Image 1 (cartoon, one colour):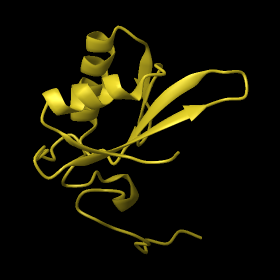
Image 2: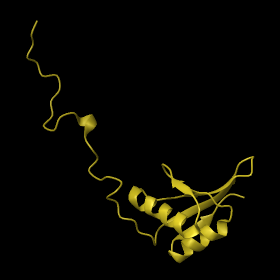
Image 3: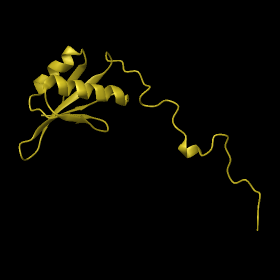
Image 4: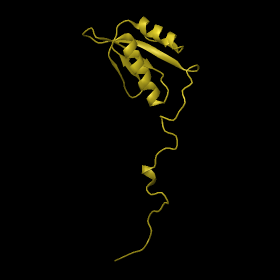
Length: 110
């Protein structure tokens, strides 16, 4: 039972595997319009981290910001999916870093 019926066709192949025309790396970051949200988090065992949210969609820019933060403060941390985590208990140091880079910030949480 051979059938030459075309079930699905496209010039470029499978539509599901097509990339978006604009990737997250291509987006330009306007630091003057950016406002980061800083929040101090602590666990039950006394570990403290600063969480930075409100990041732009540009992954490379976010990774560079996380790297610069860690180097200038001499601490550890990581860029995760949509936020940066810095392993430091003094949020003022992160605020001063943002001020030196002329990035607006807002402190959230308690």
